[in-house]
Length: 439
Picture 1 (cartoon, helix red, strand yellow):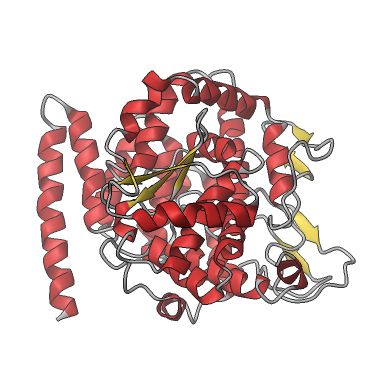
Picture 2: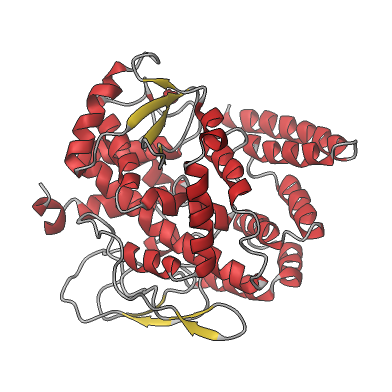
């Protein structure tokens, strides 16, 4: 029975948690920390393991990672007064924000001209926003939020102003992605990260060993992907990159902005996706090679600092690239570092919606596109049976505003809750004139 299976999983997680504690108390405590993270991969709802990690992060001065753990724990146990007290002792403002979210969630589907506070949705400070005068109606995502309004970056208020788009604005991009991208570009520390990563992409000794296990599609038993890639690239007017197939599971196709642009796709999708679904996956990944989105993605990953799965190529690339960005945050106040992470997170929330649209343009099949989103966010091994409708059913009682209201601890690219929002947004966009005109 499902309950018994879950119980056995919890027992195994508890045993591994004890092993992790023993490793931590040994000669190499970092192995214990890594093992505790693996416990959460086995059982993400084990509060004791999250609490242990939160305490470790707090003791070692990594408050941002501690806050991420508390945010997830309080999502699981929203009435746990002890957790609320512990969070408040670290960051009262974050505690207040999360408590507001429990009662009033911003609704991105709200009709035009409505008053709405978008701050919690974007994990920003309190900023009252008002929708514009456009005549458009319908579930336009994130309507009204802007990236160029006053943003608190430290002890003083500073206005981030974009002088105008410095990157190509793609016809399928989410309506606000460019604003947040311009906001990031106007922050010197983010530019420092981008510069450091550029050196990483230009240095084969830095990255080549990371993709050493990957193979060409024909060598990996997936020759179809080699023939589908030019079709997807043609739909987006992108020069076809090199396609590599990485063994095992990779949730996301990863765009590596090397001198020879390379898209890496997980082998687990080989038998799980139809040709149309594979076209969506390729279009989703190829979006990264337009308008320097891939460069921005990896820089955003670096400044946000989420924990990715152990051994995942995405994590390995981020960690290796970190050697080229050492010191970018040393001259910044702590509040400013956190602010930059929040803006990067807000950009990612919109960038993934743009990538979804690119994938849809590549496959031209909304049902196939939405099922692939479900496959990209399901549990390992379920890629072939994942269903968009089943995913939506998990959140059928959740208002759209709450689906979109994910904080820094949640990865917009793989979070199931946000995937439900993405599916609703993509189904809506497929009905718009903007999509039809791109045909």
